[in-house]
Image (cartoon, rainbow, N blue to C red; front, top):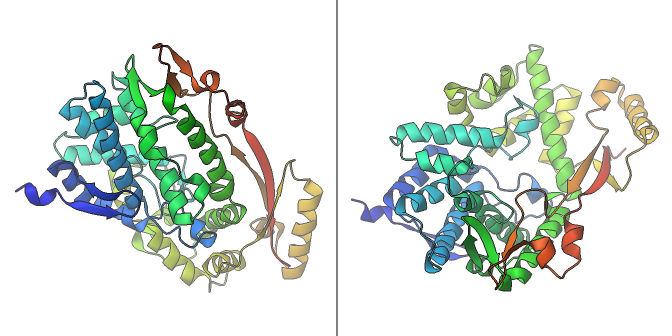
Length: 406
């Protein structure tokens, strides 16, 4: 019977969240979706903000809840959304992050080549579609941005989608960084549709401004926090080194799923259903338990990198407004080579530079449109009397370099 499938989640942010129908319940119950309980939403950010242990499962359920609110608001304003479209929106928003690997982005830059989490999400959806007899077909169309009614795609992916509306509020709650706490309820209440495109009513303009400012703040303060950057760089390097050692015939202790990705060259060209099945068995726990073991490995690079993350004894990091001078890097490299008698190649695992960029609003991408009382639709940049919307759409780049504390 379907009635026992209409369960309720108690969410610390929105209170009670209801599951809209039995099909959505079955998707949430699926092992692919349950895996998201074992993947943290913010990677290694808990090394900076101890409360940031919430998972992608949390986030996906929150997005679904906001989607329910958005659909109710739009229908109330006379926008027709069929039942089929409604369910497709729930499916698409629930599964939008299902392709994330352990600790989110570290996998994409180390042991899986040239395949993004979005592509893997799509593969999971296709696989579930065949399991659920084609019930996800419309959701996939919307997820890919190919559906004939653009506003449905924009609710899933745009500069004011349900994904952002949830993660900003949720991440600010779990990190304790109050400045990111946007009023997602009010933002959603101000949504409307004009010419089949998503717009915000004029009286919601200040909520949009606050949303963009909060987004910029959360990027500098949380997502691009320098300690979080170091931790993610170290994790990427751990996986890269582990793969190198496996390639040279070294036997490393790891779970079967992790072993597969370390021993095989995995790229978009050979990422098939079998690979997907193995990928679905990978989560944060595989990586953490491997690092706990590898910190005692005889390889200087691997053991030190793992020890740094496990015991939060990270590299030092300096942020600059200009590119880092090669001379500075060389000094740190040579110091390390001399002290530990290692090669320059090995030393480069601990001394390196990179850059980060923050752009809260992309005016060139799908712009956020404001619906004026006259019925005219204008870009937020034009509608806003706040000069800093223009400033928010300029990318700001910072440069950083990392080196050991010696």
